Amino acid sequence: MDAISKIAASINYKYRSSNLQFGGLASGLNTADIVDALMQVEAKPAERLYQKYESLGLKQKAYQQLEEKLESFETFLASFKLQATLMAKKVSIDSDRVSISASAAAVVGTYQIKVLSIASRSSMTSGRTIGPEVDPSTKFGDLVYRYNPTDSVLKIQVGATVHTVNISSQDTISDIVDKLDDIFGNGNVRFENGKLIIKSSQAFAIQTIQGTFSRVFNLNDAPIVQEAGEYVLRSTAHVGAVSMYRTLSQISTYRGISIQSGTFKINNVEINVDTNMTLKQLIDVINSSNAGVTAAYDANSDRLIVTSNQTGANAISFEDNGTNLLTLLGLDVGQFNIGGVTHVQLSSDGVNWIDLYSSSTEFSHMGLSIKVKGLIQTPLNFSVENDIDSIVSKIKEFVNKWNELMEYIYNKYNEKPVTDKKQEELSEEEKLQGMLQRDSLLNEIFFKLRGFITTRIEGEISYLWQIGIRTSSYGYQNMKMGKLELDEDRLREVLRQDPQKVWAFFGDTKGFAQQVQSYVRELTKFGGRIDNIAGISGTITKQMRSLAKELQNWLERLQKREAYLWSKFSAMEEVVSRMQAQGAWLVQFSSLNNRNR
Image 1 (cartoon, rainbow, N blue to C red):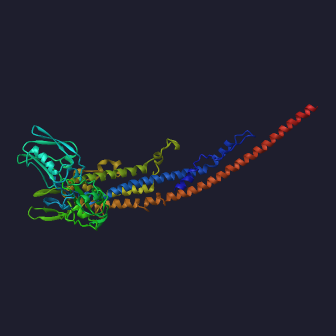
Image 2: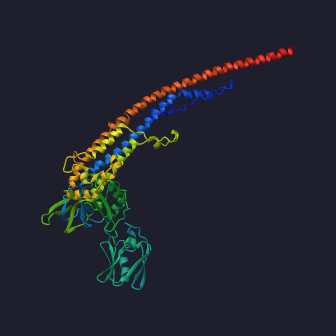
């Protein structure tokens, strides 16, 4: 169509010549205006063809707009006629531990629910710390596993007394315990399982005003708690705990373990490992793989925790492939915890219970969708009811959309073109007005749709008026337009009796909405009634192609005609020019003879 449009648009007459011509130099005539006037007369038939072409294009667009309106209504009907819409259910439940929704298939009634267990994820945790065990004879300066130790100065307040303690990188852990014992009393400072433990009968505080003592002994974020009448401070992690930013090679040196670059497997998925990777980089590689697990480093326990991404009883398998990585990470003796399932019990009488199991926290049963958030040991009541408000709202929406469509079609059929403006002053919207006035297909569509209002449907409900949808109180004009109104009280009464009857009227195989949707689909589908007229292979397109060819022929004819007229006027100018030259010569000759006398 683009090529056709370009051809047609090139002949938007008032005709204008594209050639630059000059005439009348000898005769004094305005040749250009004369040729232009003649060409405008010659171009009248082409102008009429173009106007017809443009009118067809506008009519095609008007049909396309109609098709869009019908398609929108058909899309609405596709979801409106479903049981989920017209037999909607709602659940009343008072709990933040479980949420329940109901589909149309759910049975109305009162139920009880218990949640006995919630699905959990399988996990594998390092069977030992990743960093090395540290001996009390180790020097402070050698505790390089997580932070870099530097000479430190401590301010320690015990009760109202403030003490200053200097810690040297050459001090052993035993030396440090002795220095602190001098303040807190013999036996109140211990180094056990890699952690520093300080006790005092008085409140105390330790501040590192210089160096990294508190960081190295993992006391920075450690709380002082009361236990059995004493104030106690413990390292949050053992002093051999590693930093995530240490390389695997460094960690293996701390542990005295030999490791190799290569691949290892988690759940049969190969993961590339390089000894120059940091622990954090290794964790990132695991988490971005397709192994279906998430790895995390617990800084306090100095262990790796690998957790299944899915809840339920999922296995987590490892294969070392000669890298010795599993030994380094303590996964060769890892602690495996199997994931659990969600266990829910449902009852409709409080006596007979149905057991439901799911590997996730969400599952469905007989139209109920249940999402578990917490345990419920004592039976919790909930009820399933017909959601009459939701159904009424959807039927209101149907009535409104029906009225919008019928009003649109009626107005387009009776719409008059704009006549109080010149064509070039009209907007596209104004040009489209009246394009479908008295259109035969539009007339057929309108009367077919309006006829559905009184169509009898097989079933317990046979007509719209039986569910409170009618046209009578709108008045003659709106009845004529096929517009509907809803008696909400009547509809609610029918819905309270049995919503399924309302759904059957609309959504059954030969229901009202099904029949209307089928008819509208025949109009709007590819190769349907509208497409056969306004589609890319429709009658309008064929007419426009034919007109475009005629316009192209007219353009060639007019160009030849213009060239012919210019050639004739040019010949006339040449004759006039010669006559003027002869006349000038005769005048000159006559003047010479008179002087010779």
